Image (cartoon, rainbow, N blue to C red; front, top):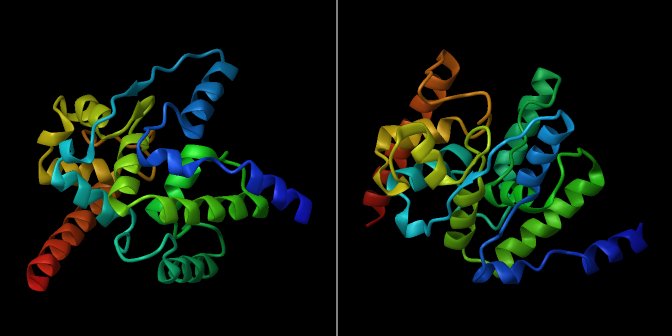
Length: 221
């Protein structure tokens, strides 16, 4: 075990490089394309990188509200969220929630396979800590928003906005942002233009959280 951990530490990705360089691909993208090839299919790669300043503030708030409300105050792990997820799973008797933060999701998206194992979780934790140590919160959010999956072969906010709403990410409205954030947990299953009951309920929760976050920001000033 010690030898394996030593090898993992030596082969850890160079997170510091992400301070200035954008990733040219991700483990998730490579996995999706490999899955398609194994079935004799092809899937396009719709991906256009944009700086965070060119992403609508509505979409930035929606993603944080939907995925990780404590993002700007935790250090990579939301222990309250993990506890709540564990209690929920215990009550349901199955793994329904994971309690992952945006930083943890970015670690998985960029570097890890979909394998579920203790060793993979350890690696995820190490990468998560490294992301938090080397990158600012704004940079982590910028990369996450640019590599998140938003549909079949659709990656990042710019491609998502163009694919779903025929506009640039900078022009996304508050309602459109909430719809885009609502599909993040299952981007290949849901479409913001086909408003199912479950998707609509998630959309409404996100809008409420966005409104609460704005009120808190105003109150803090």
